[in-house]
Length: 302
Image (cartoon, rainbow, N blue to C red):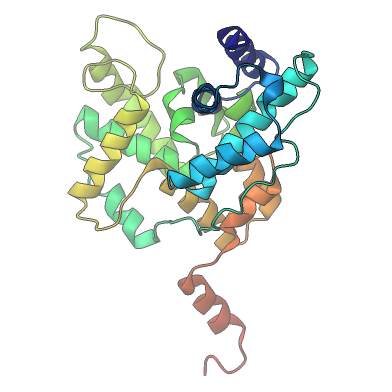
């Protein structure tokens, strides 16, 4: 169909090279294209220019019939809008049929986060006399201290940690780079792990690697490996809440804002391109509201 594979591949290269899109964005955009072209094949359409707003709305109806979430539908519209914009630039089509389609409003969910007492339990479960315990402690301290994404954490190498000024160098989405400071607890945990536990884990492998976090075989941790470690720590801490790496990121942002950090600074630390993305963290906890009330209201205390 109109050299589908040719344009599928060239669009993928466009996302990688010109847009500097993250691997996850590219992965899901290409999956969305596959879904769309399967739909066009079913409808008997053989050219990109055959697609108009009516066809687009039929496609959207098929998505809603599959009971997809509004977030999933929005992502597919965004992917296809970007694809047709690319086709316009390449003079394959004259009109982008997705340009006038409004994205469905998504549910505004408040991010889940952990309270300080819940965090304390996680910080106390690791056996710091063992290499894996030292690694786990360094991992959770760094995730909470910096708010980095699990993909960013997995990519860290030894040279990314600057103990002299207490920062970690992170390459985020779209290859955007940033430096994030970390505190004393993370510093101690990282130094202990790098000087002791990491060396013991590396000795189990025949290969050399600069990756910061290693698994029990001495090779670099994967995203799934990091999640499995957190799940085990939660189980060991007997917590009833579900904890994933992104919840630690939510917790990092929430705690900073609750303690008076300004929104722009938190945006920089999180690596968000738009301030609106950071604003979802401006909710406050009941404990914080109570502290503000007790500190500020004239009749709150004797």
